[in-house]
Amino acid sequence: MLPRLYLVTPQIDDAAGLARALDSVLPVADIAAVLLRLAAAGERELINRVKAIAPAAQDRGVALLLDGHADIVARAGADGAHLTGIAAVRDGIAALRPDRIAGAGGLATRHDAMLAGEAGADYVMFGEPDTTGHRPSFEAVLERVAWWAEVFQPPCIGFAGAPDEVAALAKAGADFVALGDWVWTTTVGPAAAVVTASQLAAGEPVA
Image (cartoon, rainbow, N blue to C red; front, side):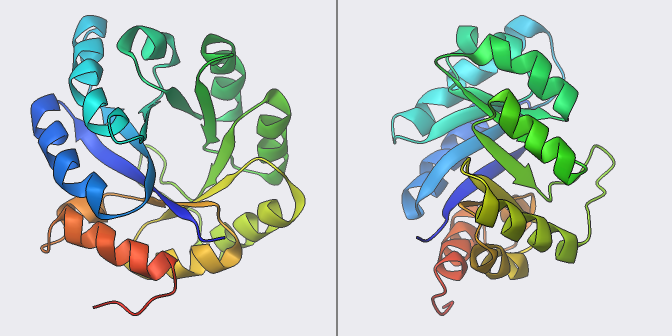
């Protein structure tokens, strides 16, 4: 089965601008979820941003997840949260159960990944950058994705830090391929970048 795409936003403070961008990006490919990264603000402002953005995703059947902020997911009307690190997974998962998605990232070891699965994470992600922008080697990410896909049931997301990583993650067995900041910074624009990623994930020639 071909992997679906998982779109990671930049740090967002302009909710209306992102909603307009999603209106152009989401129709062009099979995107399962949008991970919304919110720039720092007060709780009420964060909730208002999520509420302004959510319809652009949810009206198309695309899940909207928050990067952290498990405590506001329900009030903001999001579909779940991506929790970074096994401690955050354990702390946040109770706030999201039983109705919302709890994803797990920032898993430094195989043991952490297994603990996240045991805690009830709905998916695990490998390869995303940390707060300083550091990522594991891509070879290590591929190895972790292939290991998880072979052994475990919960879905696995492989983070593509560049277009040339998409096809390899798909071949390694990722259920979803996360698309990072390069989608938003490319000169061709995010919609065209997502089309390219979709073609690469499917093993199709890129126009």
